Length: 301
Image (cartoon, rainbow, N blue to C red):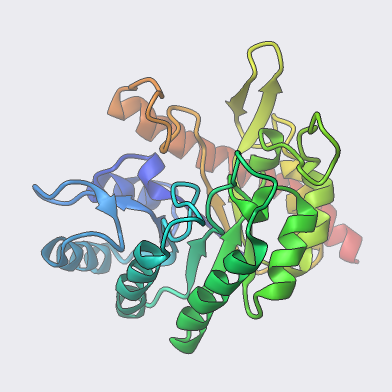
């Protein structure tokens, strides 16, 4: 097991991401949005080639690896009714870059939920995900699906149908997402998902974990992001269960404390506050795990 983080949450500049990673004593990042030099920030699979070359050099010089690409492939911004061309193109760009960096995992999704229809076009989703999964597996790489605002994140029955119909696909479990996603497998009005129930159902496929923690504020109808273990995401319980089970994958922080990366309405925060919250989140996760380890070790005997 190793600790890492979705490093653009420390800051979009690659130098900032490397600095935060080294301050925490970690050796890898989960790369999502990256900015180097005068090029605009972009997902790592969309960086212009010169910017990607600088990224590779900076990471190598710092002794920092990339454990996972946080791609935008088939994410909640892409509709299943649109052609899959953009996701296929992103996959084709990502594969050689992952191979160049020695990265084995890439986060993908299963396209946006159709809010205006009961027909989620399951077979078309499965067909597209099978194609994308084959592309990565054939290249010796492992796609991992995140429970987020997508078909596979609609509730655990949808996740299991996806996994059953897409051979070779694995899972990245996000501890916080169930708290603000409705369980569409239940009758309306949909309740929010039960994070422990969902986790237990997909546990056999989990090879990577995102840690964010959330309290749902019903009065304001919004998620309030907390330090790890202080919300309702069952972070402590899930990490303890994984460790007890011999989990040896990554635990990747996605704090959302200072700002929500993908929320265009999120308030602007000073870069130093964003950086500080990321490092503090990492330290709190380290402390949480250190508290769990003696218990799980004694449980193992």
